[in-house]
Image (cartoon, rainbow, N blue to C red; front, side, top):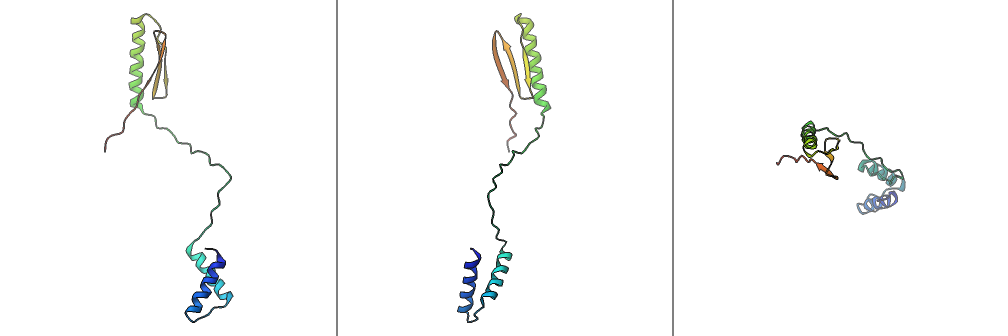
Amino acid sequence: MDREKLINEIMREAEKEGEPLTRKEAEEVADMEIKASGNRTYEKSDKKQKPAKRERKVDPEKRHILDCIRILLEGMQSNAGETVMTALKTETELYFNFHGNSYTLKLVKHRKEK
């Protein structure tokens, strides 16, 4: 509710109660009510918010599992007689080539059931 409407409403209520207020008194009461209610007007900013930078937690368990799989794949290289190229992306994905085809192995750790 804007200030002018509030002032008029306060003056009407005071008149109904039989205690008419002057305009200045109604303005003071309206100002006090606005301050007390904590009404604030918010305007949308033109600036775009920058996305929050979140620090990833490194999972050593997943990294160990993928390292073991990488060693296994490199062991397959000697048996197959061809080169197996491997690459590890953080501790989540393992990329490798086998028999001329490229593969991605993604390891997902599921949350504990509640």
